[in-house]
Structure formats: C-alpha cells, structure tokens
Length: 89
Image (cartoon, rainbow, N blue to C red):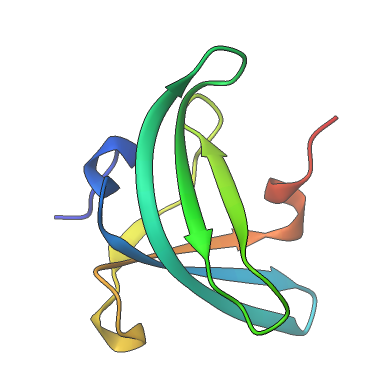
C-alpha cells in the first residue's frame, strides 16, 4: 500500500524525480518533516549534489504526488514531480 502523507517520510532517504519534457533528473537526500510558521507542514529534503547542497521543500497542503518505494534508486522512498508541480506564485 503506497504512503499518502509526507509526514510518513520523516527521517527517511528520498529520491525525487524531476521531469520537464524529455529532461529528467533524480536527486537523493534525507527528509525531515516539520511545521513552518509561514508554509505549514513541510517535508524538507536535504540534497547533497556535486554542484552544492540545497533543500527541496514540499508543502503537505499542496502535495498531490505519489509516494512509492525507492529501493530501485537506493532510497527508502521515491517521489516524482513535474516542473509544473514545483513552481508556484
């Protein structure tokens, strides 16, 4: 049964697949679930990348992606995002 809440990913390793057209990139990191005073409930995935470390922040309130097992990517779980789901105004 797939997970449905970002809170279930607290302190787990996550692979995040980003897709835009034919371009795809998978990033891996460690997740922390917390409450942000401005954003509400968030999952922050700390990514260690060759070009520098950064965070991917997902808001529970806006997240509508699918959380899948991540063993094939060497992580506990996998999330797929399209560029449209990563941009908000």
